[in-house]
Image 1 (tube, one colour):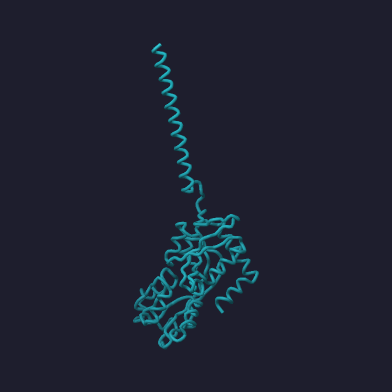
Image 2: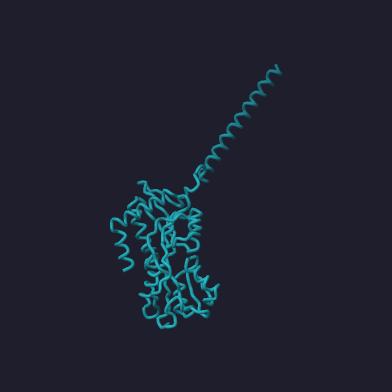
Length: 283
């Protein structure tokens, strides 16, 4: 009798242990599934959509990274809103393709890392297409082709072209731009005394106004913007360096978003919206 009771007790204990193990296994499975959902398990490489989110109607809002000190392409209005040709153009593309855009400001040298890290979906920052950048992000079709010019003080008659730069002169440009690389090459070659690389174009212009540098290099429409706003202080030179295409960009492999941008860009060029925006911002 005692033997039978011991056997029954052992069986009950074994069943209890099995039940506990089953519960633990189920709990572990639930935790793994939850972690996988948060970590994005199963997503394909290149399907980085940053902070994109959909509203109740299913309309997706993409985060666009920009550096708003490069008017008329990207700037900030009196109310602190990010505005410019890039913003209006991308908004028009979004309207055509059924998505919305939210703009966030970054330092220019942090924009590509933000896309790579998934902190933004689109670059809208008057960014020139280069081979080095194309290895890190995927560029859209070009939306603007700009030449590069020198901005100098109004009373500077010594510099009339890029060829007038001398070994005792300092030239400024914004960080991580084609222009910054160009003037660094000039400095290394001894053509100028120093390449002054600053975070924002506004900083470069301020250095020019203060006499700390003799020239600033930038895209022609941006130089025209500053010339128009400071007519009594600075002027742009007509001499153009090589034209360079500007484009939007997305994370490597995000072909779906890239196709939307390219299709929308083609459509707004065809329906006249693109020309209206050029007239608005560059006239």
